[in-house]
Image (cartoon, rainbow, N blue to C red; front, side):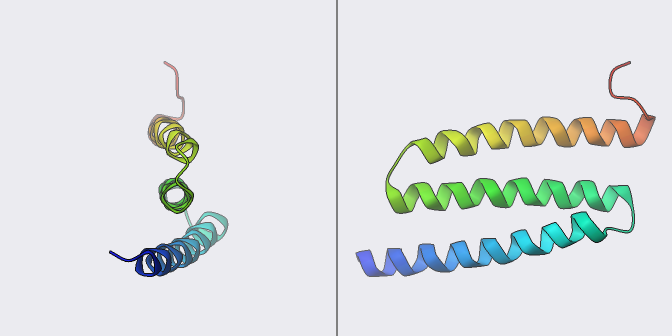
Length: 93
């Protein structure tokens, strides 16, 4: 794999992830229901995590990979908490 191919592939991936983040942001802001907004937030954190991973591959720094791991863990917990809140009206019973 040549360096130029890797560079262009990462640039294309980052542009597509940026477009996906814009679409998810639109869904969070204009979602007709609360469930759509939670789904938009879920998509937004996954896209943000993947964007950090592409930055890490591009720069070769491990700091981006650790930040992506933290975002993945916090995003999962927040999605589960929001889903429980929407279903029952309270997070802690």
